[in-house]
View 1 (cartoon, rainbow, N blue to C red):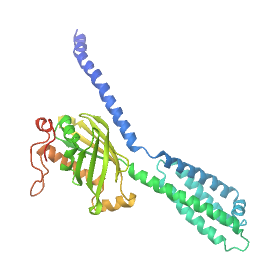
View 2: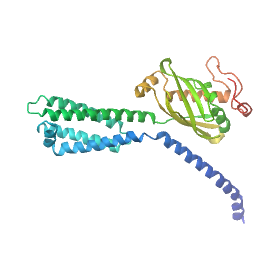
View 3: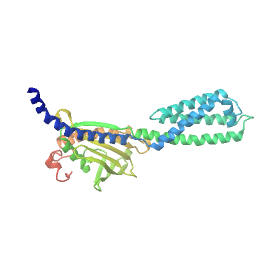
View 4: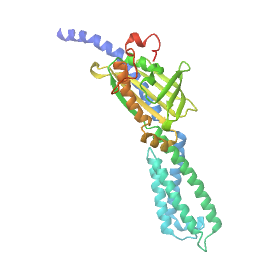
Length: 335
């Protein structure tokens, strides 16, 4: 009897779980899909890298197995076989590194360094009296072409590695996911806590125009579109073509453990102006987006919980508490 009563008592619990768990699983699948989209690399750059990897293996094997024949082929008349074998080992190492490493940028840069050595050796070979200068010229031209491809691919892979490294930042806010989502979803609220953001203007149902401060007093503008919008749960976005700063990301609003409010999780992917050098300079001056978002989230927490950004001596944003339903619903709050 007791067992049957326990089963009946647990039946509603199982029914609730059966209704809730599919929604949770579906949300997690959507979120994982967004993560994969953010982390995806440019397949064209990977294909070029793979081609260079196989080229390195083939060239290296030829240099190691038949160094004399290879030397005659390039016009060096069979000399320096030991040096050619060492170059072959270098090529094989680079090829294996490119083909087996999920982020092969540094291995392609190693090829660039090897190309410089090859060009220096070819230049020295021209001084030999018995060298075939026509073959040496053809070999030099080929190495120059491969070097250009190596440099291009290494730069693109380096940028991909930098761009696709997901910056993840999380903060807990003392407000419900629905209210926090509602405040964030009104993008014109974002300059209230994003210090480098000048303005956000809504231009369509899923589009908006953003203006931000860039490094060295410059101004950066871009148009963005919402790619995923699940009320009370997450917002995903990406910049449209022609943006000064290519960027994409997702912000997720999850209930915090123990009923402590909302965990706001931001994943940001961006392409800094000026590439890696621009990112380094911006970070030096505290203007790198991955660093900015940390401070922005802290100010966001202050705005949600107190209605303003708190400074040591005064507050710059006054007004009603933005997280209260009566104040965030029914239109945008005047700043």
